Length: 429
Ligand SMILES: *Cc1c(COP(=O)(O)O)cnc(C)c1O
Image (tube, rainbow, N blue to C red; front, side, top):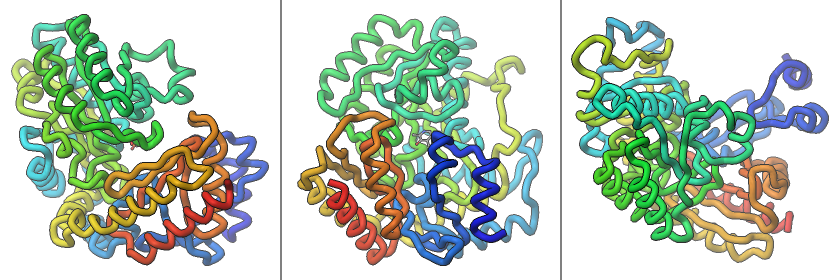
């Protein structure tokens, strides 16, 4: 199919994610990707674009890393998929062992899933079932932060706090209490959590947070002190602590896990996105010994949960290779100078007249354009369409414009990305 026919078929039949479809069908001129390499896509017409958000935060090592392609092809030649029920295979077993080795210490058991939302869904179900069968059946509610994003299934939607994503489902969601985002007044957020847990811990199963950095909620950073306090409070009140590291894991914020900023270990940790280097849908939920032990004993105590493609051998083989590359190519160490460049550029961007505020953390830089806040604001979209015209792919979150490139993006591509962004933000103001 040529480019034009692809777009015709697309507009006739593809329902796009997060997309008002009227506007899309009338006006959008979508990029038609024909090929991708390192930190660039190539449109079917041959033009190249820098992938400014690592393809929705997944492609942490860039596109088509030769070692990942080889791991994928080698595994595909032996077998592509078998279930993880009553059998196992080397990629899953070895990956579980390696993940436990790199995870915050104390997480010992790995439940495989196939994306970030299901990694969170498992964590929520594990929490509820854990209490139901260990003497505290009333502990079924959740606590999360205002503005959180934890995925798209109903459980994950319940603990998320982005209003437009939640609103239509409000009446069918499990119970979740949201405490204030700790970004502006960390002590107030800690106090709110303390009050809530003192009052209602007997009905609360778990607190779930994106540690240090909220992603889809607007790239908002908060003080790791909140996490240390949350760890202590959760211990005191016997509420489980879940870290959703689907976005923050794999060095996005600097260290391998954002949990490391606070030096605390959750009871349950969710990972996906970077886990498989963006090649395949894959995810995992890691738990400590206590949670695992809560499911042992009689057969009715088991976790009767699983996804058809959980532990998929292709994904597991690639995920293993991702970890080896992180080690052998010293990805985190070498990202430090890139993170500094991002930090410097966003400090300068913060001074532009159209910019309300800017921030950076590790391999993430974000700014709020002046105007309203909220996911449906439009100024971010104008900056991003200007960026596309100049050769960079970005997606706004309302009036928040951010970059989250591959951790190993070439310095020259990173500089070009930052220059394009600066030009676009200036042009739109
Ligand atoms: C993307 C994301 C999810 C959902 O992951 P999917 O693979 O899109 O289902 C969950 N939590 C966080 C923090 C995310 O960024």
